[in-house]
Length: 549
Image 1 (cartoon, rainbow, N blue to C red):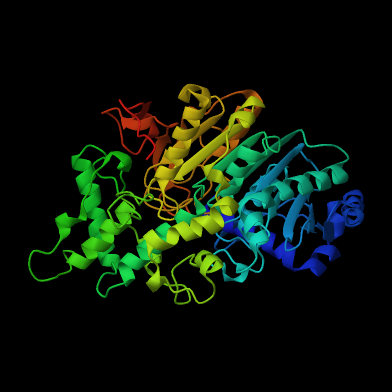
Image 2: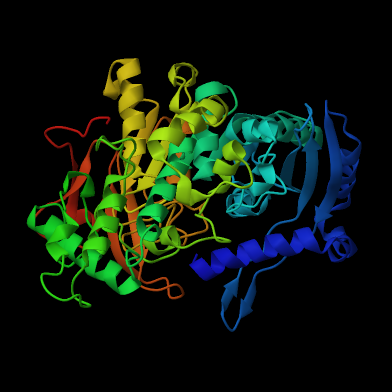
């Protein structure tokens, strides 16, 4: 399925949820029994829960259009509920229940950014519905916030807690109860998928609610929420505190070309690739591009070099000590959520800066923020509320046989890739053996992929994402969601996943395929065969894996 195909699925989902009159007028196609059971869900009584709607949605046939094939969807029951279990808490849950052919699986989905709506869960829900799963998402209890703006949550610590810890479990228990009410039986298996904030939500489930899901698939998970936002603020300040330091798209291209060339010379990239295979091992200093005479389009000014260095280093203290992670060589791209995004204001403020207003109030001004002085205050106020993914243990989840897959793009510029490596290193140390951890949890790092998808590397390997195209096959060798299910139900651990890059958005023509290997293994070129073919690579463990910083 192409990217256009996926977007069409989401458009269909949006249609069914915004035109209830049309849906009800045609709902006879969903079957009268399913309609009756769906409508009856409005009367289900759950603690602290209001069922706002329970609506049969009719099936829609596939449709051929001038812009490509638009897929249909099966008939389902759409339920919207709100759970208000404490003062200030108001968690929204949306659930899609297949009218026919339920496979006995419950499927939870995460959100993104500050959340605040159901929309970011629809991509995963569309995939779950396609597979015959009962599938749910949540607004994380943060409405009326939006994914990019959190100012609406100033002075609402309970909403911070729902966003940082509680809302996914509420979605899961509520969704499972309504699923049982609709089908008359418990789900036999439960899976979770999400990326970014949705990745954090999945880790919280594995760490603190191990009985909720048999398998959890998360990408680019936010873990240290306070310092993650601080890293974005650090980037923005580096580019904007002084004039002449913003990196234009042309300068980002210059920087990216130099980073790839440098890493290729060090043996961490392949000739002809537009991405770096192993940026974690590459050392690149943007000073090699600094203008030696008058500024020009072919060099970086001293201020531009300083900005680039700040992006690579991440936040550092006044004494030069590293406080958090930075971005890796090869991530210097102007794409959506790339380096250009990190330099541009949203309503005259840094991206995701609303979190700092929770601590310092509506008059907070980024220009006066001092990392040495102010970050201890941010952590004192928020760490215990929003950073639970930095704590906890996977021991109970592993003991009950749960399976966790984490993936992360090595060109991510919203959530530092090294944070995921550090997470696995930390939990391997807790368990006492990386091999034992690998029996229940595996990490796959994706060269050239940006935040949850996009970038210049192969990024099609997860059918639930909605950002890159669907993989060319739903089998466990090409699709991480199918690989998770095969691991949980058949005991087939994923030892290698084929990631695909398509030539364009519409033709389905494959331009390149590369293997993703379970950390700490990396994909290594065999020395013969096309570098566009996954068969030309093997998974190999380097002499020494990168440790936690």
